[in-house]
Length: 400
Image (cartoon, rainbow, N blue to C red; front, side):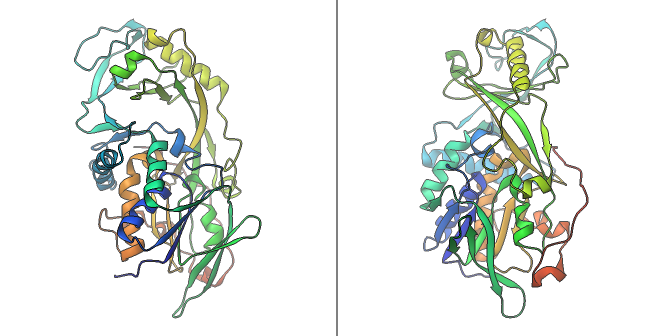
């Protein structure tokens, strides 16, 4: 179905998903004025600035997300070259078992800095389909390249709608805390784990979401890890309660997550804005556990402590799949959230697919029909106003 590109597109959320929608919309419809509204004092304030940025092309093969994996992996490489991203590179991946035996270095991918103690070491990826990028660099560049107007410290508290001829409603603007109204003729909710806010604004939909709040750390730059970039997926280590993932970056720093002790934040708390602008702090006990786990496997870091300790949330819908598409009952409203632990990888193709849907009426880069919010039920009777029906608790899927 053909569509007329919007004149004024408003994107709620300044993370990597919103940034990608902005970028691709600007390429498809240069005449569209784009505004990105972010509640915090910078873009990429949460997982889009604090995530590891691991990319894997084939790790979704055989699943409904396979095309997102493939298209996005290729787009990441294309955009990294076009934009000159310093943090992007291909890198091999090893699995490292937990244990106390001194590593027997063998194989072309075993880095010199992996010289401590552990278990079996196996190759998971040879860099032919694995890579990395710093999500903050990608997000900031995507927004810059889009030419979008960015409104920081601007929390959206409501949506203005009017009846649409023939039924349903259409969005005419969003209300900002403090009373300001920003007019638009199309809007996208790209708020990550705070996607449940959309239930309040659009009572036709249900957005079952849980935020998984996890600690991560960044270690100071070392020449050894700068020259030998190999990602590690370590097995569960009962001594520290960790299953660390280790990502050396091109600048020599090491990003480490999988440190255990994650907190699960429910939809009701997310809808109230918990951790949206403050309070998402790291767990000191998990920082200690991460330090011990890395010291165990690498003498390069034995006498070092992390430069950065942080926490962020990944958005997990109840079925572990992203929520992408139009909002039923609202002609010009869209949602793009809940991309779980693959949100950084999927951003280019998800954003491009959403931009196609918004400007052309149909996504062509990826088939996103399986990610429609309607799969969680549509509150048809609520299109006249009021709030959507209540949901019971739903289990979270973290699998990848």
